[in-house]
Image (cartoon, rainbow, N blue to C red; front, side, top):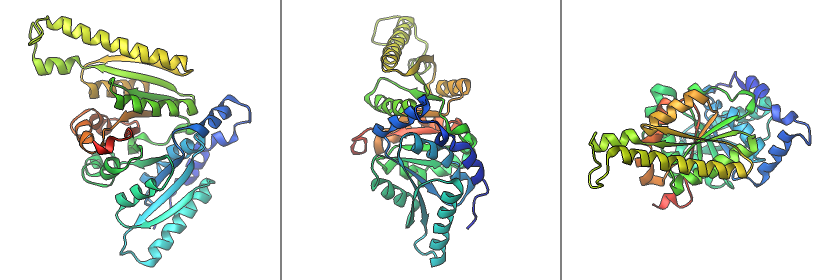
Length: 326
């Protein structure tokens, strides 16, 4: 089992908030995490540098939310006894070299099942995992560990691409929260707010007026079928309603003390969100899933799939309460 050569780098970069003076705005922001939506942060590790990239996000998130950090290593049930000893030694090495306080778990079984069960035993958990990059994202999402974790876990899951790299300075400066007016996206917005408050982040609320999808489905007709209205009027109404919704949400956030920006985009949702990601370079995107059946519709072949497969920014997938039963 190989020990990570990157750990000292993480230690320098992600623990700057531990040195903040008492009474400073940043420290006050940290203490606000006591009543946050996250009380536990779970990181699955397998001794690879790729998996360890999750720590650069998990550690500051746990710190800022005053959440308990948990590290889990899953080994094959048929493994030798020495493998379990090596796993425990590896996790001890992580905590010592990063100078972090964390509870460690070594479990035997299926990686996805054991990750989910570990999370189920924790209060208000957030699972932080890495993906396998552009070539591996298909294998990792479709029918593998992350696929099952995101589908079956009730906990929100933060997915990191290898391209994301480390979280510089342990600070999430900008968060993009795509919304569509549904209760699901607004539940995800609540999570984005929790993150933004504890990190004092800019919160970019985005909604896409899917004019391109409208034209694609109806064609470039002069009149909207069955509506008796010119297509230009229908599109204009869609865009205006989108602006109205985003303005209302942004105004409410500003009243609550958030540094919020409202952004309306036009086109295909996935492409427009990716374009905005490239423009503002956020440290986090927060999106909603809809449980087993809904996740298939939402991710595979839809907006989140596009963002996950083609973007570089870590994506926090939030599953609203009760979504698993749908």
